[in-house]
Image (cartoon, rainbow, N blue to C red; front, side, top):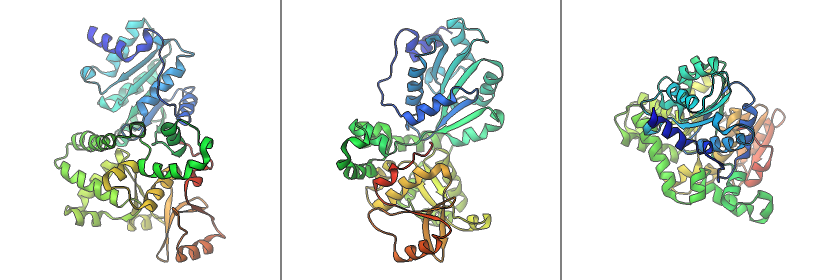
Amino acid sequence: MEELAELLHRYNPWWSGEYKTESIERKLYLEQLKALGTKRDIVLLSGLRRVGKTTLMRQHITRLLEEQKPERILYVPLDAYGLVSFSIHDIVREFRKIHQIELKERVHLFLDEVAAKTDFALELKDFHDNENAKIFASSSSASLMKEKASYLSGRTRMLEVMPLDFEEYHKFRWKTPLGAESHMLEARFEEYLQDGGMPEYVLSRDPGDLNKIIEDIITKDIYLRQNLDNKLLLKEMFKLLCERVGKRVTESRIANILDVPRGTVGRLMSHFEDTYLFYEVPVFGTLNERIKNPKKIYIGDVGLRNVTTGFRDRGAVYENLVFLSLKNEEPRYVMQDGIEIDFKIGNRLIEAKYGQPPNEKQEELLARMSHRYKVEIADGYKYFFGEKKSA
């Protein structure tokens, strides 16, 4: 266990002295982590690979150090090579041994990429039920979390970390709040349309960072983890879906283009969704109508799309950003008399148009529906200045 103790000291520098992260804070998420930290539930952070889950954990640790003893806080990246042979219990036992912490004493456990351990759900359940531990765990796989959810029923709170919104992007890119240079916002929003919100890329400006994220998701999170046999097909389907962002797609149409069985497309699509790479939006209607009609496709970050297809079709990119801002409200698209309206949420209809008004048929339909619904036209950066949506 000497090797394990050495690794834990390396991953937890605050045990040896002062610690502070130099990263830019994402206050919306940090405030949510603070609020969730007062509850007993296990907090599960999910989201795209490299979206900033680890950084948020470290930022929350920095805040905790203001009120907690450093030796009561453990951070561990469970996918690290040196930890392959150790269970989570092995690691936490060694942590308690190093600092002589009894089971009744409260500790904070930050378990990064928790799904790297096969029996993580059973282990987390045991910690929750039998030890005085507040647990924060992260994963880039929605399916693994859902698969193990029965073991953790009633014990978890999920927090999906999204790419930077425009306000965060502005802070990362120019280090100033939005209101400081209002005359520049329209031009800077155009850059946001192209760059997207992956924090590492926004800071580095190196497109290679985006390409590496795509490669890692396709290779590590899907191809290898799912034990697939055709990585080229995955890459071709990824590019095809990028080209169809904001459009209605069917499995049969994709299958015809790729010359593969429809079932194969469905399985690969589920893998893309599990890694938060793509989202599907069904039509508004009955269950039968949702099944029969094609779904609209959106990507988890527009920068990943643009580095793949090139920056074009700004309207589709803008619509994708509007979707991401509405995602947690479970939007549906509306199709009536052959006319499409982008999103319906409750009694709201939202049509995303970047620099152009709805077409004549859409205007007529929206006018007819305005007595039943609140009609909103999303156009340009000002749309994102409204009430912040919970992440």
